[in-house]
Structure formats: C-alpha cells, structure tokens
Image (cartoon, rainbow, N blue to C red):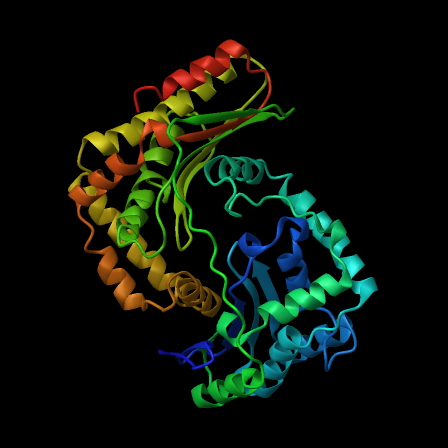
Length: 425
C-alpha cells in the first residue's frame, strides 16, 4: 500500500493486488454537514451531475455506453463529510477508466434542464428513503442528539438551488486539498499516480474551513413518539459516543458486535428466542469529532394491548442487556467469538475492491491517514473484557439516551410506561 499527501494537499492511496479487476474512487471532503442551510442537498445534487454529460461526453447515454464498453460500473454516494464518485473497470481499460472518472468529476457540464431533472430524481430518492421507518427514526434521533451541527441533516430542500449555485459550489470543492483518490486491485501504481498528479496540478488549493466541533450538552434523556399508521412498531435507542480517531473505537466495535452485530448477539439471540421480533441489530457511526451507538428493533402493531406489551418488553429487554454490560464482565467465550467473527468478516470484505477502497477513503477522510487491514485487526484483538465494561459504563447512561418510537395506538399512559422502562439504566 502506498499513501502520500502532495504539497498541494491532494491525498493519494494506491493498493495494488493480484485481483482480476480494478477500482478507483475520488472523494471530496465536503458533504452534507458543510452545506449552508439554504443550499441543503447541493452536495448530493453535484454527485448526481458526475454521471451526466461532461467535457468529453455529450450525454449521459454516451457516458453509460462508454462504461458498458469497459465492463465497468460508475457509481457514487454522498455522506455528511464526503462526496464520492467511483468506478470499477477492467485493468486493460485503465486509460479509458481514468479518462472517464476525471472528466466526470473535474469537468461536468452544467445544464439547466439536466439540473432540474436531477432535482426531481433526488426528490424521488428522498421520498423512497423516508418510506423506510428506520431511516425516519434515525433522522429524528440525529436531530435530537446533534442539533445545530449539520449532522442532524435529514431533508434535502433542493428547490432553491440554481445553476450558478452548482457552478460556484463545484469550483469551491474541487480543490486538491479537498480531494482523496484511492485505487485498488490490478492497477499500474506509477501510471495512475502520475495521472492523478497531472489532473490536479493546474488547480489551486482552496481555503479550508473546519466544521464546528460537536460538544455534548445533553443532560437528560430524550424520547420522541412519532404517530404513524403502520402495521408494526419501530424503536431506536441511541447514545452519543466519540470521534473516529478515539482509540476506544476498537472496543466499541467489539461491543457492538457482541450486543447486536451478529446472528448470535445478545440482543438478537434474546429477542428472537423470546419470539418478540423478526430482526433486531445494533450499529455504530463515527465522524471526526463525535459518533453514536444505536439499537434498532420492531414488532407487530395490530392496535392491541398484547402488541403494545410486546413493544414494552422489547425496550425493557434492550435496557436489561445494556445495563448488564455495565455491571458484569463479558464472558471470555463471548469476547473470543466477537473477535473471531470480526476478523473473518474483515478478511472477507477485503476481498471486495470497492469495500477496500471505501475503507481507506473513510479513514483518510476522518483522520487524514489510512490504517492497514493488519493494523486494524491487531488493535481490534487487543480489546479486553475490562475495557468493554468501562466503555459501557461511560456511554450507556440514562442522561444521554435518545429514544424514538414510531407507531400509533399508544396512549399517554403507554408513553409514560415506556419512559419508566429506562429509569434504572
């Protein structure tokens, strides 16, 4: 693996291997969190323009045909801290692949009709996302935990974005010191490195304005009830944690695996064994300055007291599991299983060039440098039972709990009962 930061701030990571294919990703370290409120969604809209016409391609169809000819796939994503375009390709088509992705990102065409079309597409995409109840609840939770930081961003109001906004925004963010290029797989390292340098050599670095760091001020639990005519109840419990560069994230990764990150986790094992849920899981998210731990579960809602009692029982069992991790050491067997599971999953995922590239891209975005697969697994396997209990004691506290429940037929008494369930966390 080769990593360097050039004098102009451009970051390059090249990880050649004996794979049969190749993959390249261009990340722009400016996402939803950095958008001005009046231009909410402009990062996502810019990402969509990367797939439309650009300098050498007069139409989206021409670009799509070019990608198909290479046997590749051009795609991307937008997150709170990153806009990304990426391409898988046949190594024998390296020149064509580099022509395509650099042309798409550096030289998109700004056309009013295309911009209006993509704004409609984004609205359809967002409407689909908010048909997902867990997505709705996660948005509510982030608004509760991270108000005023940009991390609470949920809705993209693109109606007010004009062509000149996008042109100015593109010029602002396509700067070498905001660019990370990662290439993995069967690649010619020197050839790709030189091409990357040449593409950005004539572009001046931009002014870097850091996001306002998150400061935790929450001093009491927050509970949100969202009425919705659904055939199921959905609940999410979340706790703010810490940034990606915090060494405790390895312990949090292991703890997440034990609580709800695998089939035999404490959460899924108990709730499924009791017949309370079809599925339940936990997640962790990190940014440079903060993060959160989250537990999700759902159950049937036929408007009966029996179903409401089932919801109460699910929340009570989740609280019980979290409380137990604070009071008792995780068993040796459970810790060994978690490490074995995470090691096997990581090794499997690194067989996927896209995952490998996104893994490094995320690390460079968060902490400015990559951590190798070997280093990651080494630090993961140093986690011990005491560090897990200490972590649970630090973060699974009632005052920092954020709970959201979606579903109707809950009375005022039911809501009070739910709130009382976590009083002894």
